[in-house]
Amino acid sequence: MTYTYEYSRPNLAVDCVVFGLDEPNSLKVMLIRRSLPPFQDQWALPGGFVRVDESVDAAARRELQEETGLKDVFLEQLYTFGLLDRDPRERVVTIAYYALVNLQEHLIQAATDASEAGWFSITQLPPLAFDHNEIIAVAIARLKGKVRYEPIGFELLPKKFTLSQLQTLYETVLGMPLDKRNFRKKILKMGLLIELDETQTEVAHRAARLYQFDESTYRQLKEKGFNFEL
Amino acid sequence: MTYTYEYSRPNLAVDCVVFGLDEPNSLKVMLIRRSLPPFQDQWALPGGFVRVDESVDAAARRELQEETGLKDVFLEQLYTFGLLDRDPRERVVTIAYYALVNLQEHLIQAATDASEAGWFSITQLPPLAFDHNEIIAVAIARLKGKVRYEPIGFELLPKKFTLSQLQTLYETVLGMPLDKRNFRKKILKMGLLIELDETQTEVAHRAARLYQFDESTYRQLKEKGFNFEL
Image (tube, rainbow over all chains, first blue to last red):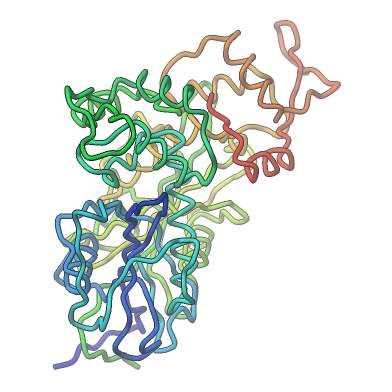
C-alpha cells in the first residue's frame, strides 16, 4: 500500500531531549545508538516519524518509550527544526521535545531501532547524528532561560531533597555558582517548598533537613502570574 | 505530476500571528479573510503549506508576504500545533510564528488566496477558521510571558517614542496598569534607552522627551545573561 499526493511533502519527525541529573553535579542527556542507516552506529536523540493518526505529542511519547523504555515522562515541546538537508534521506522537519527526569528513578533500556541507550554529560557529548547536537544546544539554552524565571528542575531531584541538592541543581543548569544564603532566602521566599520533619539518612556529615516541592501551590501561583525570578 | 510515499504523511503548514499596537492602547492581530474552502469567507491567520524545497521559516515569510504584502518582518517561531482533526480536509500539522510590527509603518493588503486583510483587537476577535483562536491565545500568553523578563515590543512603537508610549505598550500587553515612577525607574535602569535631544511635536500637552531603543546594547547584555526582569 502506498500514498499519493498532488505535491511533494516533507516528512515529519519528533526528537526527544531527556535531561537527567547525576551526582556529582552533572547534567546528562539520554542518547541512543542508531542500529539503522543513516548515521548507523552513531549516537542520536530518541525519535522517529510522526504517524498520520497520532498527535505530535503522542508521537514523541511513543518514540521515547519504544527506543528507551521511558514512559510517563512530561515532555514539553522545545522547537521545530525545519532547515533543508537535515536528513540525507529526504526532507524531514522535526519537532523537538524535552523532558527532565530523575536519573535514579528512570532506568533506560535500548529497544527497537536503538542498539544501545545511555546517559551522556552535556559537557562531553559525542558527535551526534543529523542536527542533534544543535537541538541539544537549544534545549540547554531553554533550560537555562527557564530556571531564571520559573522554579523548574524539581523533576530532576528525588521526591525529598536538601536545599544543597536543589542549589547544586540550579548551579549545574546555570553553569555558575550561586551564593548559598541568597539562594536559600529566595527559594524559601517563593513558598514552594514543604519543609519535612525528616533529615538525610546515611550521611557522613551532619544530616540536613529534607524538603518537598509543593506542586499545587506552584500551579496556583503560576495562574496568578506570580514572578518566580530567582 | 504526483508524489507517492510508503506511509501516509501529515501535511505541513505555517501560520503567522502578527501583532500591531494601535492608539489608543489596543493590541491588534492581523487576519485575512479566506477566499477558498475550507472556512471560506471566514477570518483566519495568514499561512499556508510548507513547500518541500523551502525551510519552515522561509515558508512563513513567503505566506505572510503573499497574503498580506508584509515583508522584512522578524518572525519568531511560536509553537507547533499537531492535534488530529485540526483541518477538515486532511491531517495538517502547523508551525505557528509570531511577529511584532509597527502598525503605522506596515500597511497591509490582501493578496492571492485572501480576499481581505485587516487588524483586529485581541479583545474583539471574530470566530476564526481552524484552531486559529487557540493559536492566537498561545501567542498572547507568550508575549505576556516575554515582557516579564525581556525588553520586547519596541518593534511595536515608532522609532522615537516617549516613556508614556512605552508604558502604555507594556500595560496593553500585560493587560494591567503599572506604577509610572516604578516603571520609569526600572526601564531606565536597564540602560537600553537612548535619550534623544528631541521632544514630541504637535502635542497639546507639554511635549515629552523622546527615546530610542539601544539594540546593540541589548544584544550585548543578553549575551551576558543580563536579567531584564521588569
